[in-house]
Length: 177
Image 1 (cartoon, rainbow, N blue to C red):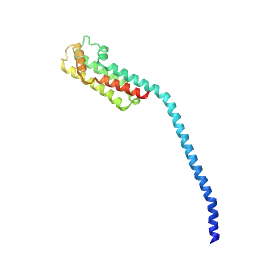
Image 2: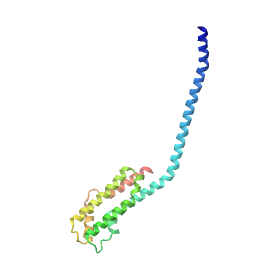
Image 3: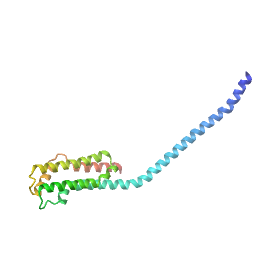
Image 4: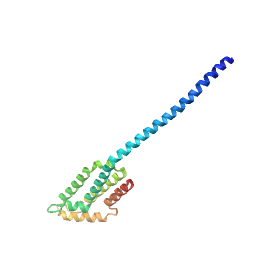
């Protein structure tokens, strides 16, 4: 019996230190590998941010330009209401807004979902104002009359959504830099 206990004790004297060394090495190597992975991830993010930041800034610039171009003041200057009916002018304005928006649709991947929804909402609100203005006048009226009506209805809006969207855009850029 003492011989068996002595054998077990001898095995434990060898196994226990080996187990302690193994566990110590295991945890050290695991931590070292995790830290190495974290370092590689950090370096990847730094390298990526050098490439993505200019693209994101360009997206913000393009969205600011979109908002400026679809604002009634700018839109009505770019689509001149000369010698056409209000109905034709109405269609041209909606077409211009749609083209501007579709041209910048891909920029949504670089901005927050809240900002993108604000920009979409601004566009929808402006389309609503244009449609409402078109309904308030005769289809065959001069386009200049529709132009004036759009400006009046836009000014009468409590929340000028283009300005709100532009301010949200500026806030988001301010958070980044």
